[in-house]
Amino acid sequence: MFLRNFNKILPNKIFIRNILTKDNKTTAVFLNDAVGAPLMINSLNQKGFRLNNNFSVIGSMIIFPRTVLSWRVKEAEEVNAESLSLFTILEPKLDVIIIGKGDKENVISLKTIQQMRSKGNSLEILPTEQACYTYNFLVSEGRFVAAALLPPKSLTISISDGQDIDLKLLNDVEL
Amino acid sequence: MGGTASKVFRRASKPAREFNLESRVERILDREKPTPAPRHPGTEHINLPDSAKMKEDLFEADTELLKRLEEVYVTSHDTWAGQKDAVGKSRPLPVDKETIADKPYGYSEPRKISYGKTTLKNVLTFMTDHNQSPDEWNSTKISEKFKLDKENVDHILKYYNLFTLILPGKHKVIKYDAEATKTLGAQRVIQLPAPESKQI
Image 1 (tube, rainbow over the protein chains, first blue to last red):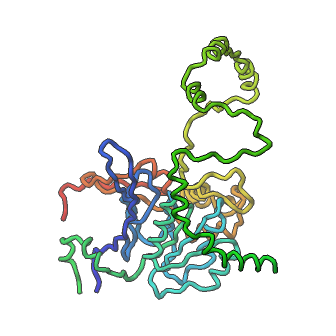
Image 2: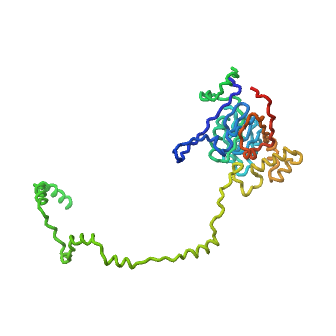
Image 3: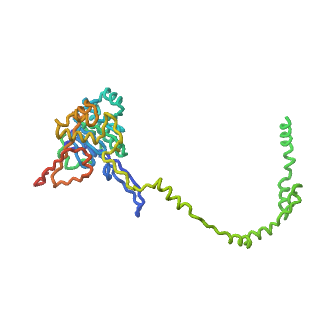
């Protein structure tokens, strides 16, 4: 099944804070929407990503807490020490480098991992969806992390995603 | 052996010792005023104070002691006032109360950058320069200026680039933080013209 205009919406981490106000109310804040929040990923599809500042990014990207760069890599096979060279020259060193390898079955060569490890960079290789979750989680904690993400070719659709599909879009569904 | 014998003896004699114990205890307790225990020969000569008089004394104010208390007067001389200035000159208290600036690129700028490394801010700078004039800002010049390996710079320029930010026409207002876009790494900003009629 291929859904055109379908965006996989990522679950938003909710931060609940209890402030002693006059009414003594508890407020819940979506971390992606918090004031001064770092760049996070709200949703993704086969073409790109939508960030929490309402910008859409087309194609592969490198996301830093405040910066987005385009990445001229289309396939997981192209991910190697050369295409990851930016991370090795950065000072201060990144806490974790998250690599969204696209689909689940994509493989990133062991040689790449070893080469990056020998330079002192730890890679976290995940399918792109999980990579987005992980990146959002880590960046919300204020860590200096970066994610190199390839758009996935297929998206997992869970039952809860049905609630997010705009009813207008259902006319465009191609089965 | 002796210990064991005495234990056995005490066990055997227990019924005899406890014979009619309760009634004997009651008999003593029923007396109106029990006879006090005999005093130790060493302290027999000391006269104990009368307890009834002690109670009275406790609840009466002692005029003599109160008179002495009236004579007491506490004064203090501020010797610290002079010292404060002397210490304050050599070790002044912090005056700057500004909050720490937010990290614009999500990391705190390092004081020292080692050879072959650079910050994200510098990477964005040389990418912008290279895109504007690729011949002038070639990898050789960049590697010399930022003290990087030429090979690394070549790979970075090959695989990474800055985005072009395209803003839609005015009918669709997108909320975004203008300050944050400076650090975003968008090189060019293209504002699309507003469409005349809204398309569905």
